[in-house]
Image (tube, rainbow, N blue to C red; front, top):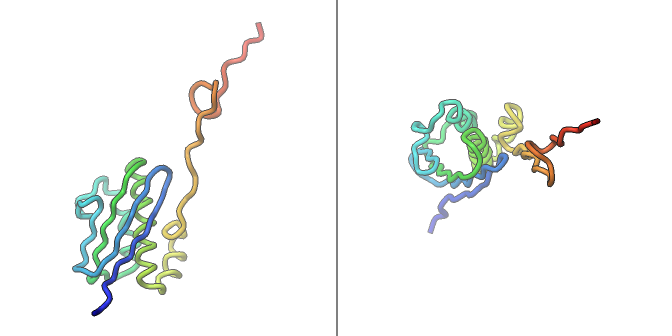
Amino acid sequence: MSKKLLINTVGKRKRAIAHATLTEGKGTVRINKLLIDQVQPIIARMKMLEPIMLAGDISKLNISVRTQGGGQISQADAVRVAIGRALLENNKKLADTFLEYDRQILVPDVRFKESSKPNKHGNARSATQKSYR
């Protein structure tokens, strides 16, 4: 009985979370059950494809990603991290390539929106207007 390839990874950015599953297959990449060629906007698609382009030939691997939360670009960054980590787990030689190109492929950006404070109006740091008279 031969071992089947199955790698699960997670990528995060702001409030977006992406779960990637890498298996043996025909080289298809799906994001939320959509082929990656159908993902809009194009900028988000290009972000998601960066680790795949750097990895080279993935014709024997299928990548399926579920993503939720955040906005379009945050989800694209989360997918990018999840795919990068899955490809790295499959082939450890890609570590130097990914880190040389962009560290954010493997290490997620941990910045979050600052939460609003009690008794403050508007955004997180604004205070009420002060009156001198």
